[in-house]
Length: 367
Figure 1 (cartoon, rainbow, N blue to C red):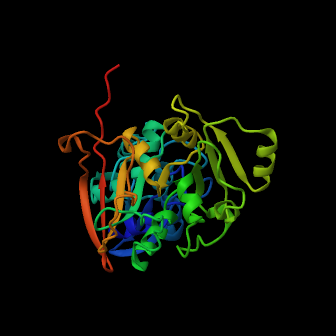
Figure 2: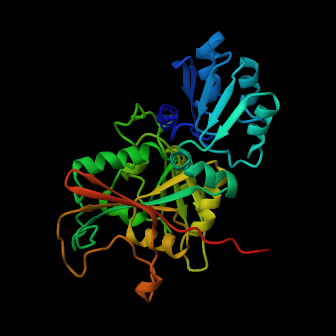
């Protein structure tokens, strides 16, 4: 199962809106087939592993990170392929939260005499597909807030300089985070001050190919981002979210640069972030990595729209009352009311420390 999970991680950021799945076929204690999910419309992990195994699949054991599908989508049901191949037993890390599957795949296998076991390395499997789980159950993307801060909580000096707070090791991890996400989001001030490309570089071959770069999203209420910004000239597609009407000529010029303009005003005159996430969900964007700045992150936290936090903390002191902090917005009045992350993990990256954790899920209101 550990090998299957390693395979599943290779599919992250490449196969949305499908889940990232890994599968391994074992016969007489020998791996005879393995595979991971390919882009939508191509083979699922189970099908690839079975094809590799060939006749040796008969009577063997399959380890798969997610319950095999049992419905017709872009590809045939994996349960039927498993049954036809003569697999004797299937070990599943987690059940598929998709309402079309959700235990039915396991049931179909057992009805045909295939032994099915569920729960091995379940927690790790759930983490691999945390974005898929939220998307398939709510239609909304999984939102990760990422920021780099000094030991005294600053994201830049009072003059706005922020290069580089985090170490090279930490920055490489950021590119890995970009590589496994569907979209990267930033506020207009981040673009105007830092002029970033917001691309995934040097990660598993994603490189600079336009078709495999994450979607870039700029939240710019008044439309201040110039067409000369590097984010518009990097490989891939960019979405500019505005809180004002788009002029026809403006739309034509931006379209030539492969930039989509989206009007999403709110009562406060800012971009309606919840509506933006809904639009992204309809576009089958399952995960969004938000890279600042403080105004955007503050609005997302105030709106209860963040699912996970990844913070890189550098052992430096910046100081300055006017220096910006990572999260703006309204915040809370009492420390007792502050947002307390769950399932927190800490990892050392060079001289920096990466702290990650999950925002507690709010109980759903009864209709």
